Image (cartoon, rainbow, N blue to C red):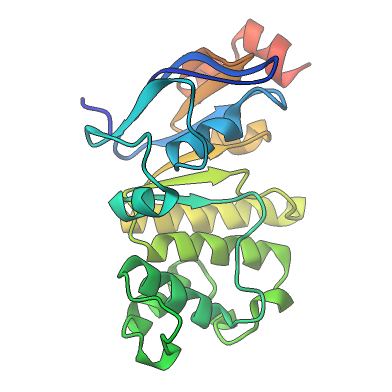
Length: 246
């Protein structure tokens, strides 16, 4: 099976800190790939490389066989790779629906200084995505008023409005109350499946990983320590010792 997104021989250092040391990792269509590892291991750095925010000192990243390194984040988004950040990136003073319309206009290349929200034609698509992520009830609320769980889901909805093939997520439920995490991930994974979007997510909660990932990559000291299905990776003694703990 050909990889949808592929990284080979990635190397990046920040002074004396090695964030990636010859990393090779493939993402296949339909994956929900979890990247786990200790803080500072290089997990978020990898997402930044794949989305054009960082350029490594060596290696290559391809999407559907096309080289990504050197492309801007906007160009990579238009190719079909979207990003959801640990802190939701919303227009705080706009309503949820207005945020969605702005994302749709950006994808279509029609967002400019004089764009009127009333002229953006993707309202139906935007409302359908909000329905999928359980946020249709807040579409007319200003984004800054939303609780953290809803903000996370709206951030995912904005990414889905870009019509990606792959969505990269950095701790999708961080900052959310423990009682809400699984409901949010159930909604999120359901929306990804409905849109047929492949996902990669950085996560520290091993219960979330075991429940929602079909593959796990363990990132440690700039290298992929182990890769495979959750039941194999999360029970590996070395992974338990270096990443999960007792």
